[in-house]
Length: 356
Image 1 (cartoon, rainbow, N blue to C red):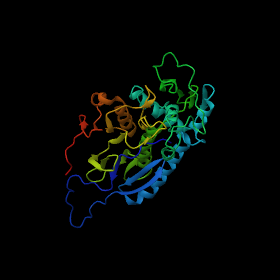
Image 2 (tube, one colour):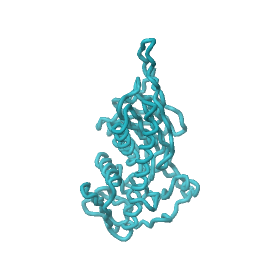
Image 3 (cartoon, rainbow, N blue to C red):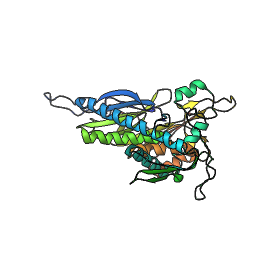
Image 4 (cartoon, rainbow, N blue to C red):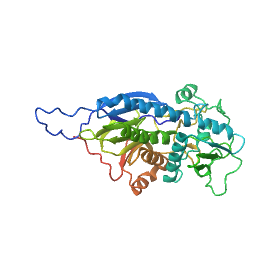
Protein backbone atom coordinates (compact mmCIF):
# COMPACT_ATOMS: atom_id res chain seq x y z
CA UNK A 1 0.00 0.00 0.00
CA UNK A 2 1.06 3.59 -0.51
CA UNK A 3 2.44 5.12 2.63
CA UNK A 4 3.80 8.43 3.89
CA UNK A 5 7.44 8.12 5.01
CA UNK A 6 8.23 8.70 8.66
CA UNK A 7 8.54 12.37 9.55
CA UNK A 8 7.56 12.08 13.20
CA UNK A 9 9.83 10.09 15.46
CA UNK A 10 9.11 8.73 18.91
CA UNK A 11 11.79 8.78 21.55
CA UNK A 12 11.90 5.81 23.88
CA UNK A 13 12.08 7.76 27.13
CA UNK A 14 10.28 10.99 28.10
CA UNK A 15 12.55 13.97 28.78
CA UNK A 16 10.05 16.64 29.82
CA UNK A 17 9.82 18.02 33.33
CA UNK A 18 12.03 16.61 36.09
CA UNK A 19 10.78 13.29 37.41
CA UNK A 20 9.04 13.45 40.78
CA UNK A 21 11.12 12.26 43.71
CA UNK A 22 10.66 8.69 44.92
CA UNK A 23 11.34 7.11 48.30
CA UNK A 24 14.81 5.65 48.33
CA UNK A 25 13.41 2.14 48.58
CA UNK A 26 11.00 2.55 45.67
CA UNK A 27 12.20 1.87 42.10
CA UNK A 28 11.90 4.66 39.56
CA UNK A 29 9.42 4.05 36.74
CA UNK A 30 10.90 2.05 33.90
CA UNK A 31 11.40 3.80 30.59
CA UNK A 32 9.09 2.62 27.79
CA UNK A 33 10.29 -0.33 25.75
CA UNK A 34 10.11 -0.28 21.97
CA UNK A 35 10.64 -2.35 18.85
CA UNK A 36 10.71 -1.38 15.17
CA UNK A 37 9.92 -3.28 11.99
CA UNK A 38 9.11 -2.65 8.33
CA UNK A 39 5.64 -3.26 6.89
CA UNK A 40 3.15 -1.63 4.50
CA UNK A 41 6.01 0.15 2.75
CA UNK A 42 7.27 2.11 5.74
CA UNK A 43 9.07 1.94 9.09
CA UNK A 44 6.91 1.21 12.12
CA UNK A 45 7.52 1.33 15.85
CA UNK A 46 5.56 0.15 18.89
CA UNK A 47 6.32 1.44 22.42
CA UNK A 48 4.94 0.03 25.66
CA UNK A 49 5.10 1.20 29.26
CA UNK A 50 5.34 -2.38 30.51
CA UNK A 51 8.20 -4.48 29.10
CA UNK A 52 6.29 -7.77 29.32
CA UNK A 53 3.65 -6.53 26.84
CA UNK A 54 6.04 -5.60 24.03
CA UNK A 55 6.08 -9.05 22.39
CA UNK A 56 2.30 -9.51 22.36
CA UNK A 57 1.84 -5.90 21.22
CA UNK A 58 4.16 -6.47 18.26
CA UNK A 59 2.29 -9.64 17.30
CA UNK A 60 -1.07 -7.84 17.33
CA UNK A 61 0.35 -4.96 15.30
CA UNK A 62 1.96 -7.19 12.67
CA UNK A 63 -1.18 -9.29 12.29
CA UNK A 64 -3.40 -6.26 11.78
CA UNK A 65 -1.04 -4.65 9.27
CA UNK A 66 -0.94 -7.90 7.28
CA UNK A 67 -4.75 -7.85 7.10
CA UNK A 68 -4.68 -4.19 6.07
CA UNK A 69 -2.16 -4.82 3.30
CA UNK A 70 -4.17 -7.73 1.89
CA UNK A 71 -7.28 -5.58 1.79
CA UNK A 72 -6.22 -2.16 0.50
CA UNK A 73 -2.72 -2.25 -1.02
CA UNK A 74 -2.87 -1.01 -4.59
CA UNK A 75 0.60 -2.51 -5.16
CA UNK A 76 -0.60 -6.08 -4.57
CA UNK A 77 -2.44 -7.71 -7.49
CA UNK A 78 -4.19 -10.04 -5.02
CA UNK A 79 -5.57 -7.27 -2.79
CA UNK A 80 -9.27 -6.42 -2.65
CA UNK A 81 -8.53 -2.92 -3.94
CA UNK A 82 -6.75 -4.28 -7.02
CA UNK A 83 -9.50 -6.83 -7.65
CA UNK A 84 -12.17 -4.10 -7.59
CA UNK A 85 -10.07 -1.90 -9.90
CA UNK A 86 -9.75 -4.70 -12.46
CA UNK A 87 -13.49 -5.21 -12.43
CA UNK A 88 -14.00 -1.45 -12.96
CA UNK A 89 -11.85 -1.27 -16.09
CA UNK A 90 -14.76 -1.55 -18.50
CA UNK A 91 -17.61 -0.18 -16.45
CA UNK A 92 -18.95 0.38 -12.94
CA UNK A 93 -18.08 -2.45 -10.57
CA UNK A 94 -19.32 -3.61 -7.21
CA UNK A 95 -18.15 -6.03 -4.54
CA UNK A 96 -18.99 -7.20 -1.07
CA UNK A 97 -15.79 -6.44 0.78
CA UNK A 98 -14.13 -7.68 3.95
CA UNK A 99 -14.64 -6.02 7.30
CA UNK A 100 -11.08 -4.68 7.07
CA UNK A 101 -11.63 -3.09 3.65
CA UNK A 102 -14.96 -1.66 4.84
CA UNK A 103 -13.43 -0.11 7.95
CA UNK A 104 -10.62 1.62 6.09
CA UNK A 105 -12.81 2.75 3.22
CA UNK A 106 -15.17 4.27 5.80
CA UNK A 107 -12.21 6.07 7.38
CA UNK A 108 -10.99 7.27 3.98
CA UNK A 109 -14.41 8.68 3.12
CA UNK A 110 -14.54 10.31 6.55
CA UNK A 111 -11.23 12.06 5.79
CA UNK A 112 -12.70 13.23 2.47
CA UNK A 113 -15.75 14.67 4.21
CA UNK A 114 -13.64 16.43 6.84
CA UNK A 115 -11.49 18.12 4.20
CA UNK A 116 -14.17 18.90 1.64
CA UNK A 117 -12.62 16.40 -0.77
CA UNK A 118 -9.03 17.66 -0.55
CA UNK A 119 -8.14 14.18 0.70
CA UNK A 120 -9.77 11.93 -1.91
CA UNK A 121 -9.57 8.11 -2.01
CA UNK A 122 -10.24 8.02 -5.78
CA UNK A 123 -6.86 9.45 -6.83
CA UNK A 124 -5.30 6.04 -7.49
CA UNK A 125 -5.51 6.21 -11.28
CA UNK A 126 -3.99 9.70 -11.26
CA UNK A 127 -1.08 8.42 -9.18
CA UNK A 128 -0.56 5.61 -11.70
CA UNK A 129 -0.58 8.11 -14.55
CA UNK A 130 1.98 10.22 -12.65
CA UNK A 131 4.28 7.21 -12.51
CA UNK A 132 3.61 6.01 -8.97
CA UNK A 133 2.24 2.61 -9.95
CA UNK A 134 4.54 0.33 -7.94
CA UNK A 135 6.65 0.56 -4.81
CA UNK A 136 8.50 3.88 -4.66
CA UNK A 137 11.98 2.34 -4.75
CA UNK A 138 11.11 0.74 -8.09
CA UNK A 139 9.64 4.00 -9.39
CA UNK A 140 12.81 5.90 -8.48
CA UNK A 141 15.03 3.29 -10.09
CA UNK A 142 13.04 3.54 -13.29
CA UNK A 143 13.13 7.37 -13.28
CA UNK A 144 10.55 7.59 -16.03
CA UNK A 145 6.80 7.72 -16.18
CA UNK A 146 5.19 4.55 -17.58
CA UNK A 147 2.28 4.87 -19.94
CA UNK A 148 0.34 2.48 -17.71
CA UNK A 149 0.74 0.00 -14.90
CA UNK A 150 2.11 -3.39 -15.85
CA UNK A 151 -0.64 -5.16 -13.91
CA UNK A 152 -3.54 -2.78 -14.22
CA UNK A 153 -5.01 -0.82 -17.12
CA UNK A 154 -6.77 2.35 -16.06
CA UNK A 155 -9.53 3.85 -18.18
CA UNK A 156 -10.90 7.25 -17.27
CA UNK A 157 -14.67 7.26 -16.73
CA UNK A 158 -16.60 8.44 -19.82
CA UNK A 159 -18.39 11.18 -17.88
CA UNK A 160 -18.68 12.48 -14.36
CA UNK A 161 -21.95 12.43 -12.48
CA UNK A 162 -23.60 15.86 -12.80
CA UNK A 163 -23.76 16.35 -9.01
CA UNK A 164 -19.99 16.02 -8.62
CA UNK A 165 -17.54 18.92 -8.63
CA UNK A 166 -15.24 19.09 -11.62
CA UNK A 167 -12.34 16.65 -11.40
CA UNK A 168 -9.66 15.54 -13.81
CA UNK A 169 -10.88 12.61 -15.87
CA UNK A 170 -8.83 10.07 -13.91
CA UNK A 171 -10.32 11.17 -10.56
CA UNK A 172 -14.06 10.49 -10.34
CA UNK A 173 -14.24 12.06 -6.87
CA UNK A 174 -14.98 10.55 -3.47
CA UNK A 175 -18.73 11.14 -3.74
CA UNK A 176 -18.80 8.77 -6.70
CA UNK A 177 -18.02 5.83 -4.40
CA UNK A 178 -21.18 4.11 -3.17
CA UNK A 179 -20.69 2.33 0.13
CA UNK A 180 -23.18 0.56 2.39
CA UNK A 181 -21.47 -0.07 5.75
CA UNK A 182 -24.11 -2.60 6.85
CA UNK A 183 -23.84 -4.95 3.86
CA UNK A 184 -20.23 -3.87 3.10
CA UNK A 185 -21.18 -3.41 -0.55
CA UNK A 186 -18.94 -1.02 -2.51
CA UNK A 187 -19.73 0.36 -5.98
CA UNK A 188 -16.97 2.13 -7.93
CA UNK A 189 -17.32 4.03 -11.24
CA UNK A 190 -15.52 2.90 -14.36
CA UNK A 191 -11.76 3.47 -14.17
CA UNK A 192 -11.64 3.89 -10.39
CA UNK A 193 -8.56 2.77 -8.49
CA UNK A 194 -9.09 3.40 -4.79
CA UNK A 195 -5.98 4.67 -3.00
CA UNK A 196 -6.48 4.83 0.75
CA UNK A 197 -2.74 5.27 1.21
CA UNK A 198 -1.80 7.50 4.11
CA UNK A 199 -5.36 7.73 5.45
CA UNK A 200 -5.44 3.95 5.96
CA UNK A 201 -2.02 4.04 7.61
CA UNK A 202 -3.16 6.75 10.01
CA UNK A 203 -6.44 4.98 10.74
CA UNK A 204 -4.45 1.79 11.38
CA UNK A 205 -2.43 3.56 14.05
CA UNK A 206 -5.70 4.51 15.76
CA UNK A 207 -7.14 1.02 15.38
CA UNK A 208 -4.04 -0.80 16.62
CA UNK A 209 -3.71 1.50 19.63
CA UNK A 210 -7.30 0.61 20.56
CA UNK A 211 -6.68 -3.11 20.02
CA UNK A 212 -3.61 -3.04 22.25
CA UNK A 213 -5.42 -1.24 25.07
CA UNK A 214 -8.29 -3.73 24.87
CA UNK A 215 -6.01 -6.78 24.93
CA UNK A 216 -3.10 -5.82 27.17
CA UNK A 217 -2.35 -3.87 30.36
CA UNK A 218 -0.27 -0.71 30.36
CA UNK A 219 0.22 2.08 27.85
CA UNK A 220 1.05 2.01 24.16
CA UNK A 221 2.26 4.29 21.44
CA UNK A 222 1.92 3.15 17.81
CA UNK A 223 4.01 4.94 15.18
CA UNK A 224 3.22 3.82 11.63
CA UNK A 225 5.54 5.77 9.38
CA UNK A 226 4.97 8.98 11.32
CA UNK A 227 1.25 8.58 12.02
CA UNK A 228 1.13 8.33 15.80
CA UNK A 229 -1.62 7.21 18.16
CA UNK A 230 -1.49 6.19 21.81
CA UNK A 231 -3.68 4.43 24.35
CA UNK A 232 -3.70 3.30 27.96
CA UNK A 233 -1.48 4.64 30.72
CA UNK A 234 1.09 7.36 30.05
CA UNK A 235 4.80 7.22 30.89
CA UNK A 236 5.96 9.83 33.40
CA UNK A 237 6.05 13.16 31.55
CA UNK A 238 4.09 11.80 28.59
CA UNK A 239 5.34 10.40 25.28
CA UNK A 240 8.15 12.32 23.60
CA UNK A 241 7.32 13.05 19.96
CA UNK A 242 10.07 14.37 17.71
CA UNK A 243 9.17 16.42 14.65
CA UNK A 244 11.69 15.25 12.07
CA UNK A 245 12.76 16.98 8.85
CA UNK A 246 13.32 15.24 5.53
CA UNK A 247 17.07 15.07 6.20
CA UNK A 248 16.55 13.39 9.57
CA UNK A 249 17.04 16.38 11.87
CA UNK A 250 14.78 16.60 14.93
CA UNK A 251 13.25 20.05 14.62
CA UNK A 252 11.28 19.99 17.84
CA UNK A 253 10.19 17.61 20.59
CA UNK A 254 6.64 17.81 21.92
CA UNK A 255 4.84 15.90 24.67
CA UNK A 256 2.07 13.50 23.77
CA UNK A 257 -0.52 13.07 26.51
CA UNK A 258 -3.25 11.36 24.50
CA UNK A 259 -3.20 13.42 21.31
CA UNK A 260 -2.49 11.87 17.93
CA UNK A 261 0.05 13.34 15.52
CA UNK A 262 0.80 13.17 11.81
CA UNK A 263 3.16 14.86 9.36
CA UNK A 264 2.69 15.24 5.61
CA UNK A 265 5.82 16.00 3.59
CA UNK A 266 6.53 17.01 0.00
CA UNK A 267 10.27 16.24 0.37
CA UNK A 268 10.57 12.50 0.93
CA UNK A 269 8.19 10.54 -1.27
CA UNK A 270 9.33 12.06 -4.59
CA UNK A 271 10.31 10.74 -8.02
CA UNK A 272 11.62 12.06 -11.33
CA UNK A 273 9.87 11.81 -14.69
CA UNK A 274 10.99 11.12 -18.25
CA UNK A 275 10.71 14.83 -19.04
CA UNK A 276 13.80 16.54 -17.61
CA UNK A 277 12.07 19.91 -17.93
CA UNK A 278 9.26 18.80 -15.62
CA UNK A 279 9.78 19.10 -11.85
CA UNK A 280 9.89 16.00 -9.70
CA UNK A 281 6.59 14.62 -8.51
CA UNK A 282 5.62 14.14 -4.89
CA UNK A 283 2.88 11.83 -3.72
CA UNK A 284 0.41 14.40 -2.36
CA UNK A 285 -1.91 14.97 -5.31
CA UNK A 286 -4.34 17.85 -5.51
CA UNK A 287 -7.58 16.11 -6.57
CA UNK A 288 -8.68 19.34 -8.25
CA UNK A 289 -5.83 19.08 -10.77
CA UNK A 290 -4.66 15.47 -10.66
CA UNK A 291 -1.08 16.67 -10.17
CA UNK A 292 1.33 16.97 -7.26
CA UNK A 293 0.16 19.84 -5.09
CA UNK A 294 1.89 23.14 -5.80
CA UNK A 295 2.71 24.37 -2.32
CA UNK A 296 5.08 26.50 -0.26
CA UNK A 297 5.25 23.89 2.51
CA UNK A 298 8.03 21.34 2.90
CA UNK A 299 6.01 19.58 5.59
CA UNK A 300 3.08 20.12 7.92
CA UNK A 301 2.66 18.46 11.33
CA UNK A 302 -0.73 18.39 13.05
CA UNK A 303 -2.14 17.22 16.37
CA UNK A 304 -5.70 15.97 16.65
CA UNK A 305 -7.95 13.57 18.52
CA UNK A 306 -7.06 10.77 16.10
CA UNK A 307 -4.18 10.01 13.77
CA UNK A 308 -6.67 9.85 10.90
CA UNK A 309 -7.83 13.41 11.53
CA UNK A 310 -4.29 14.66 12.08
CA UNK A 311 -3.23 13.10 8.77
CA UNK A 312 -6.26 14.47 6.93
CA UNK A 313 -5.49 17.96 8.25
CA UNK A 314 -1.77 17.83 7.41
CA UNK A 315 -2.46 16.52 3.89
CA UNK A 316 -5.14 19.15 3.24
CA UNK A 317 -2.79 21.85 4.53
CA UNK A 318 -0.15 20.92 1.95
CA UNK A 319 -2.76 21.23 -0.81
CA UNK A 320 -4.23 24.48 0.52
CA UNK A 321 -0.83 26.21 0.32
CA UNK A 322 -1.10 29.76 1.64
CA UNK A 323 -4.64 29.24 2.89
CA UNK A 324 -3.55 26.42 5.20
CA UNK A 325 -2.80 28.32 8.45
CA UNK A 326 -6.20 30.03 8.49
CA UNK A 327 -7.99 26.79 7.59
CA UNK A 328 -6.22 24.85 10.34
CA UNK A 329 -6.91 27.57 12.91
CA UNK A 330 -10.57 27.74 11.92
CA UNK A 331 -10.87 24.00 12.46
CA UNK A 332 -9.04 24.06 15.80
CA UNK A 333 -6.03 22.04 14.63
CA UNK A 334 -2.71 22.79 16.40
CA UNK A 335 -0.06 22.61 13.70
CA UNK A 336 3.52 23.38 12.76
CA UNK A 337 4.04 24.33 9.09
CA UNK A 338 7.62 24.26 7.80
CA UNK A 339 8.06 26.21 4.57
CA UNK A 340 10.46 25.39 1.76
CA UNK A 341 12.36 28.62 2.54
CA UNK A 342 12.90 27.58 6.17
CA UNK A 343 10.19 29.73 7.71
CA UNK A 344 8.05 28.14 10.43
CA UNK A 345 4.38 29.00 10.97
CA UNK A 346 2.27 27.67 13.82
CA UNK A 347 -1.44 27.70 14.59
CA UNK A 348 -3.05 28.24 18.02
CA UNK A 349 -2.29 25.38 20.36
CA UNK A 350 1.17 24.65 18.97
CA UNK A 351 4.15 26.30 20.67
CA UNK A 352 7.75 26.55 19.53
CA UNK A 353 9.08 26.98 23.06
CA UNK A 354 12.13 24.87 23.83
CA UNK A 355 11.57 21.77 25.94
CA UNK A 356 13.16 21.52 29.37
